[in-house]
Image (cartoon, rainbow, N blue to C red; front, side):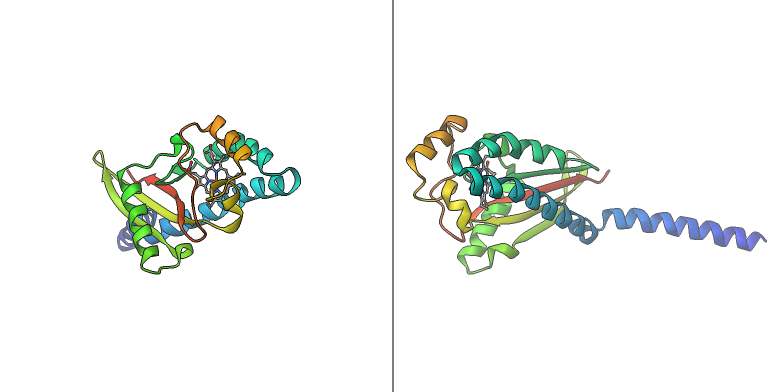
Length: 190
Ligand code: HEC
């Protein structure tokens, strides 16, 4: 009888250790992060692309300006902080911190060396203010539809509109396949 109780207790102890380990397993967290990015990206594209097609890029800028931050805010849940950032920014609210900046510089270096930007991601558990934080980034390459608003030949009237919302815009002059920015996610572990 006693033995069974001890065995049961040992199992409970093992079980909870197993759970907390899984909660801090970087690979498990990275998979969760990838899932969030997928849904987030789908929703952003699902908002932008139909407006571009039906109403044109000027209307798409209105939608992007209104919705991008709103959609981003909605993905901040279950302990996750979710966002988009870049080295050359459109919205200063999306500014990177030191870890994000260093990671994007690493992505740019890898792209210059021939890496496929679609496959670039990085995750790591770091210490921040005495706390363990899981951090994840996934590169966002420049695709063809992005050039209308981020390329080298943005229509002057359209750019005037962009500038009216984002007077400090630096997110133009991009070429196909370059690094536009990155999805960035973090989760506090204790
Ligand atoms: C209709 C114009 C338009 C198109 C097309 C467009 N963007 Fe943007 N982009 C914007 C606007 C406006 C913002 C600022 C959103 C905000 O306020 O957060 C932005 C912001 C971003 C950001 C966030 C970082 C920053 O600089 O503030 C990234 C990353 C980004 N765009 C990538 C892309 C990619 C990749 C594509 C192509 C798939 C694309 N964009 C297509 C207008 C556009």
